[in-house]
Picture 1 (cartoon, rainbow, N blue to C red):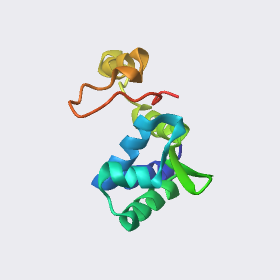
Picture 2 (picture 1 turned 90 degrees about the horizontal axis):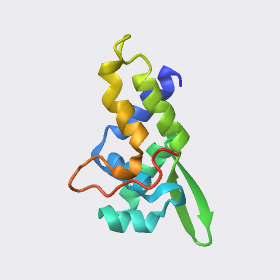
Picture 3 (picture 1 turned 30 degrees about the horizontal axis):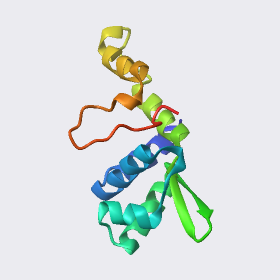
Length: 127
């Protein structure tokens, strides 16, 4: 991942509503969620949600597909993975113990969640 792409992704996530949408879609997994369902779940007005989805889509963090009359949004897990790799690529500076907690989380799988009290485990964040 290039710095420009990483900056787009980080910038897109640096807003509370967009971060909430992204995290909800991570939890939804590859199946994604309909825009209306996202709006109801997060109590975001449809016009506001549309703008947030556009920003996330332009940063290549999510993708949309049409299913009948609904537009389904899903996280682009490969972009999320590439962003995480970009952020941690030079981690450790030769000291593996610095990154050990990150490696442990990745190895145990995302189904364990992070321990946040309001978080349900992501079904496929490591896809």
